[in-house]
Each structure stands twice: as structure tokens, then as C-alpha cells.
Image (cartoon, rainbow, N blue to C red):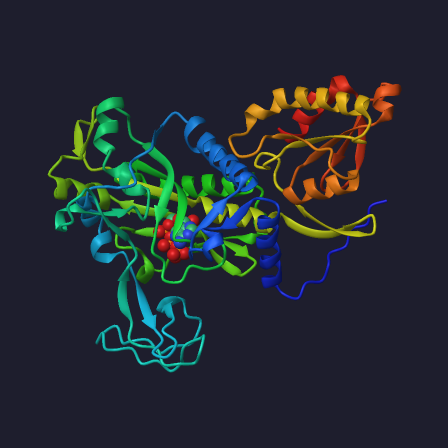
Length: 469
Ligand code: ATP
């Protein structure tokens, strides 16, 4: 009999700690450079974390690129000519206000300090008067100064002004600078989009909250080129696509909120932005952005590079610079949102258990196969056969990281279930004596309910396919 009960927790931060510890224990995510004491704002993905992340990326690529006829995939270089970042406004303006404590020297992002500070008068731009102090030691905070968040580097053996480059802080610009290439190679008709998945780097002043604010992370971005008069219609279409995506990866509707940016907080390139915010264990914060970037980027690159980035409409014989709608999706924030909404603690068979309730489409392992006993060769042989059968069928549906089908004969069956629950495997298949002696099929256990069903061997592949989609 299954008995489920939610355990009382001290606080949401306990839950965050439990998720981080599960991620380490079970091989999802480790602190970057851990044996050297870490490197703040970096995280290393282990086999299950990588499989989860790859499943999310593959599903995004399928929905946003492969399933459509109007998308062009890209994989642009991370390092770009510094002029690209001057044109985009990042060299001049991609900065956050940094404040330093005069006593402990800890640094904070002024706009993120939870304290009630008295802000400067925007009219006079005068120095900020702080009524509150350092959240760590109570010391006085110095004046805010702008801190550019791009990682600067030099390219080649000679260090000079000309050799400066930056690790890209967003994938978007790699697509804008290739706009003409796509037009010349494919002659697409508006509206059409360019899509890219890749790393982005930001020298965040205060990385925090696990994967939420990292210094190295991944983005999945679309730049969707449109006629300017269509922007409102296209914005609404992309809001719907984005919401469908959130639901498909299993995020609960009641934890997703759409927030409209106020005029004062819009980025320099944006006329309208709405964020999807998510209820993480540490509060409601940004998950994704959707921005109407107008023709800002193409215009800027056109005038800085001297290359014509206009579009010629064959039907209307008009030449103009297309406008852009940009849905921007952070991969790591998606992983975190998925992990924190999938994390469940309950009681089963009188024992506490933890499980990850992943949507089967993104679960790192879809099916685990066990022989009931490890020391009975006939059970192990049969289990190996079934494992090979399922592996052949389902392994291609996942990518590098962990196989979609696992074989496990370690410890007792309860222990194996617990391990699979903790990595979020939706189904476990057990081969027992009835399988061999009575041809009674195998048992298939459901992760969420713990219920077991007997399924005929010949039906197994169809049964599992039906469940995991
Ligand atoms: P925030 O206000 O939280 O700093 P942002 O508005 O600067 O974020 P965008 O520039 O819109 O973020 O970046 C697009 C997406 O990239 C975000 O919606 C988020 O999913 C992801 N992202 C941005 N910064 C980080 C980061 N430091 N760590 C992890 N993901 C990030």
C-alpha cells in the first residue's frame, strides 16, 4: 500500500540545499573547479545533468527550428570582432551598478540589494545617499560605479587595443552579423528566424542561487525578422509559443508569471519586453525574456560595418531593415526551474523518499531494467536480453550524457528503486521468477505512484513507448 505525505520543511532555502545536494550526490551538477575550492559562478554538469540539459536543448531545437519551415540554425563563434560589441552597445553600456563595502570589501549589485536604500535623484544625477549598510558586516557602502560585465581578452600574440575581444555575453549578435549570409544563401521570405544555442559569459558581480546567476551559462535564442507593422501580432504569437514550451517541459502553470517591463527598465534596444518569471525556491525571478528589438541591431551593425543589411521584398519592391522579435531562453535557468518543480519528498511504504518528477520527454533515463536477484544467472540473462531490446528501441531518442535505458543489479530492489526515483526515471522494469517460469511478463513500476503492473514481454516496447511518448 502506498502512503504519501508531504514532509514539513523549515524553509524554501532547505529545499534549495536538498536539490543542490541531490544534484551532486547523483551526478547531475557539480561546483566548477571543486577540488580547488571552486570558481564562483561556474558549474560542471555530470552525466545525468548533461543528459537532462541535452534533452531540453534537443526538444527546444525540435520545436523552435526543426518542426518549422521558417527557421535557420546557426552556430556562430564565441569570440567576435570587438566592433560587433561596440555596435551592439555592449562596450559602452553592458554594465551593472557596483557598490563596495568599505569595511569587509564585499561587492554587491546595487539594484539587487534588498535593503531600502535612498536612491539618487535622477534629475540631478547626484551621489547616492545610503541609509542602509553592507548586508554582510554592517559597514558603510561606497558610491556606485558602473561595472562592465563582459569578459575581456586579447586575441593573438600581440596585446594592443586592436587585439581586444570579448567572450560573448549573449548569442544574439552572432546571428545579426550573419543576417546577410543567410539572406544570400537561402533567400528567405519575411517573416523568418535565425536560431542558436550556445554559451554566453557575464562577469556577474554577485553570482548566486545555484544555476540561476552564473558567469558562464547557455542560451537558446531566436531572432525573428518581421515587417515593422507586424510587431504586435508577432509578439503575441511568440508569447504563446513560449508559454506552450514552458508547459511541455513540465513547469506548473501556477508557478509561471508574465511580467511586463516598465518603460524605464527597458534595454536600450527594446520597445517592449515581457519576462517569464518563475517561482524558484528562492523567490519569483526571471526565467526567460521576450523582446521587441526593433531594427536597432541590424541598423547599428549596418552603420558600423558599412555593409548594407537591408532586405528587399520581391513582391512589394520595397527595401527596408526588418524588425526583430527575440525570445531568449536560458538553458541553465530552465534546468533549475525543471529541477525545482520536479523535486518531491514524500513517504512510500512507511519510508521517506525523494523523487524527481521529470516529464518523460526530458528525463535523463527513461527506463531502468533489473533482474530481481543478482546471483541467479537465469534472471540476469533474461534481464540483459530485455535491456538490450529496450536500449535498441529507446537509446537513440536521447543524446550524449547518460543512456536512456539503464541496467542495474546493485543492492536490493528497494535500493534500486530509490536510486532511479532520485534521478527521475519514469519506469523501472523487473524480471522475476514468474517471468521465467510462467511466462508471466515483467513488472513495470511507475515512478510517481509506485504502482506495479505486469506487462507481457511482447507488449513491453509498445507499452513503454505509449507512456513516454
Ligand atoms: P537578469 O536581469 O536576471 O540579470 P537579464 O534580463 O540580464 O537577466 P537577458 O539579458 O534577457 O537576462 O538574458 C536572456 C536569458 O539568459 C535570461 O532570461 C536568462 O534565462 C539567461 N541568463 C541571463 N543571465 C544569466 C546568468 N547570469 N546566469 C544564468 N542565466 C542567465
